[in-house]
Amino acid sequence: MEPDPEAAISVRGLVKRYGDFTAVDGLDLDIHRGEIFALLGPNGAGKTTTVEICEGYRARDAGEVRVLGEDPAEGSRAWKARLGIVLQSGSGDSQLTVRELVAAQASYYADPRDVDEVLALVGLTEKAGVRGRLLSGGQRRRLDVALGIVGRPTLLFLDEPTTGFDPEARRQFWSLIRSLRDLGTTMLLTTHYLDEAEALADRVGVIAGGRLVEVAVPGALGGRETAPAVVSWSEDGVRRSQATATPTAFVAELAARFSGEVPDLAVTRPTLEDVYLQMIGDAR
Amino acid sequence: MTAPAREAPALPPLASVYRSRVSVELKEFFRQRESVVFTLLLPVLLLVVFGAVLNFDLGDGVSFTQYFMAGIIAAGILGASLQNMAISIATERSDGTLKHLAGTPMPRSAFFIGKIVQVLAVTLVSIVILLLVGVVFYGVDLPTGSDWLTFAWVTVLGAAACTLLGIAISSIAKNGRSASATVTPFALLLQFVSGVFFQFSEIPHWMQVFASLFPLKWMAQGLRSVFLPDALAADEPAGSWELERVALVLGLWCIAGLVLCIRSFRWQDR
Image 1 (cartoon, each protein chain N blue to C red):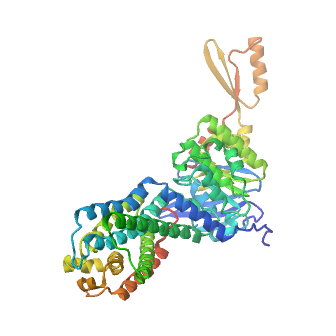
Image 2 (image 1 turned 180 degrees about the vertical axis):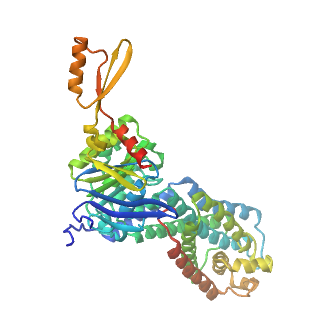
Image 3 (image 1 turned 90 degrees about the horizontal axis):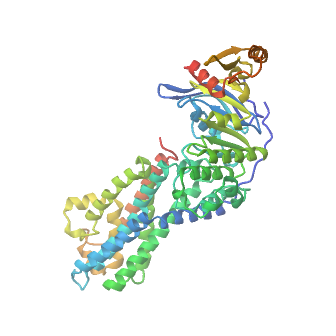
């Protein structure tokens, strides 16, 4: 099968080896224009290798890759001008202030975003005059994102962007990502946080052992939406639970039996984390 | 399969990216206290100490400080170019700065233009401070006439050779710290055997031969022709300033350094 030239990213049969270790082992992937795609997977599953091949940082051993219609191995400057890259390793130490760093980055693009607008978007307006090397971990990450978006990218790569964020900073970051999506930016996000993937992604891909084991909308991953529900309640001081495909009928039965309120009633379906852990467990 | 239609965004003019990189590189250097102290102030400190302690007469009414002026300026150029490039680029490689830049549409030439202008600026500042201190406090005689021209070409050619070598060394080093740990002692060693701290004619022959393999000895010799009266050329091992040979050796180091840079430069850690 040929790569899809209309997709933002299209990968067919990608293979990457490091010595005897096969990091990526025949991976296929399509990311549509305008979507947020989250790539999930344990450390060493091949996430960063795949992303860095798409960004043009690493050479591949086999397979076809098209990113915005071009082969990243031959990525031209004009092609790079349409990408925004937030690396896992960040953008380095600097004696320049936050505003100077974003302005320098903007100077590499023909039609950059306004520097102050970008600082406001990532919440660094108050830190504009602080030198890059003096920022905290979370502030640095926001600076990395500012550098990634100032060139007005069509496609934005975010490799574990919220590592080191406190919960409030993550929420702010999520709303930033949503506003970028509203502006039409396609995003490839890798993350360890399943709630992040669930909150942001239009589709989620799970990578394990160098292959993509499933792609789905977050709610349907691993057959989650049709998985049996678990009804649990308390009876005679004991916590009881029952898996059932017909939870409504089962709860009605319980209600009849207790003639009214069922003590401590809960109906749950597997969380994204449950199905994810099962998937990467199966792939091992 | 037909190629998809895609918009080709124009790139900014090269000159504006070059200006931006030059400004980045100048700020990175002059705002970092360690690099300013190490690269700019250390040679001044040495000039002050040597000028105060070893201000003896070399004959013909020439003081050792006049001799030392040539050597310490050569050492200052070495620090501003070779040591500065080897350490700063190795650091930028290991902290991810270079990898980040490689992922942007910045033309790669802009990175090197920025570094070259940084070296030239630091070299110029270093020379001006050393000359000021030498003239004001130790009565050093400034060069005259065509000696300025020799001063200029020895400085530019020496800085070019050492910049290229420094960039090449940065690719061999594991990180900034290991670059500093290897380059700093080696630079110090070269200064001892190349006629910076002692008169070159006084050191053992085998050390002279060793020093002749590296640019610093030739830079110092070229600058002695600038700062010392021609009568003292007779004290040189060759009996003359050998300016043609200075140009030749520094030129060869430029070529070797360029080849090493092209073969070894990396934008990311292995």
